[in-house]
Length: 185
Image (cartoon, rainbow, N blue to C red; front, top):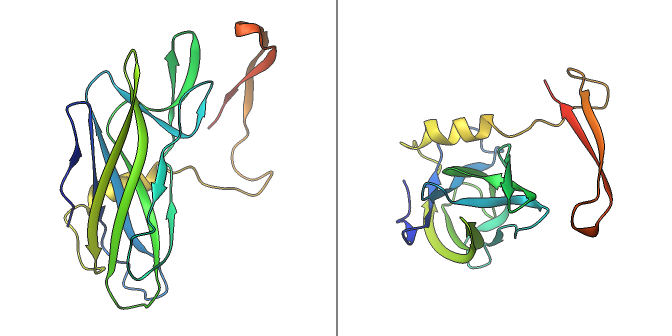
């Protein structure tokens, strides 16, 4: 299932449900789908040189013990001489949800404050509501694809090595900083 879209011509938001893993201990799966007009972008949890990270409010939800927002890998977005970090096309932020009472439906209510930007940035707000039962979902494929884009945590020293591509000093905007470009596997 999915909630209705909430937004305008620039952007819109809805909640989508994922299928359950047939394991009572596993979190319920859902996602926040953000649709962006071509040429517009929104920000990651750490927005870079400028920008505003999204703020999530799930406090009006029912039977919700905890919810974790999972972030697919973002991209660098040049913005008026600065580099911001976010999403320049439609994105789904997967959610891992733990119910207060297992086996009972969760009524997920989201209030999202975020920013969308083209040449100018515009504050946006969306509200969405969805009942999660953990049944099969028609949104499973797009949610699984978003989950596959979430960076994995690896213990130090495991996985493929990072390579340093370049190191340079940058004094833009009166701030001195060192920029290190890494190549990740």
